Length: 523
Image (tube, rainbow, N blue to C red; front, top):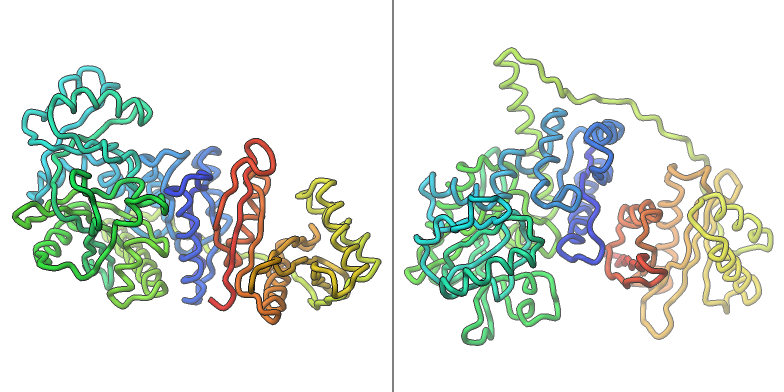
């Protein structure tokens, strides 16, 4: 199948947002291994829904792999993407709009859990921007302390710190305005009775039309000092150097845990919220070892390091198995909806259109390693044709070629040229990184503008990787800029298996960060 991998452009420098790129990479690799054709489809909502639908239609997918986590950098709006796919009639992975809306707004989640008789901690809402509704904090009198305060419509532990756990009513009433202002002063807060006990994350995946509960993961708080709240706060998830990150340990072998109760509650949540595809339920156990649901996460993170992927692997599933199950659930759900529509004698207005896609012919591709003086002019023409390089950058590229022409194999710069029907169509320049072992820099890669979109760049990069591997290369590093102008460049690297690794802020100019991508050969 042709699968549109839909995702939001992340906020640079924000680890909780950048992880979507790791999810995209995992999905693409698994889709390719399954024999499908992934098509990267970044979703920018600035142009309106009509433009987005046109973009999806142009890629003519059989299925949409939905990895959209925010709309216009607003997490609470990400259910809109699923609603858009539903309205257009495309099968898509994960939960539908209604389930995503219910699980994104923690106030709705808590109300539904209580209505369905699923155990959850008592709660109240705080939203001073809603005049008259929250000034007295309705529901506060029914709470026992301590409580935990968190944004009502965020995930990834955003806004959660040790100060989120509050021990008495006086401190709560003093802290709420400050916390609300610190988090932007516009979004509502959830005040929840804090279950001071063990914490579990339980993942579920749909297989054969029914949810399967994966091995529950307990979060252990190792070396935790007395008095420090035992919570997975923002630092524990996203700051590798922080005490919380280092000392929060996941185990899939919890001792003396009520596993059957946990499984039963998870399945009840699946049915109550109308979940599909995959999900995660977060729970805490009280002093009596009784589980209480903290929140339900539809479409949880599937980055390689995520709890969901680790739980699936512990259960014996590969990343390929997981993505395959998600696709199967999407197609199965689409067929079920289509069947219901036919039974009701309604027309499926969003029937998938199988568009014919024209593919440009490339011609015969060959490679050569040794540069010749005539390459100077051709290289300058190629780089200029792309429109991606400034004049000073092109001058540097020519200098590297001159260095190779002058010094030959003694030069630290190695070149590889790609020719199509005997004419140079692209080139790459690379070399070993001084004082490292098996590490190479990819300095330059460019394809003539008239030959782009025909697979020349990917073929050239693959051949260069083979050459580097033969020279003992294990890791390849490549740098690019964060400006919107270089979005196609970043997408090209991701498409070819390069993972975003690091960001150097303000490196090239104010507002222009340096981004570093890496690929491990043979992985």
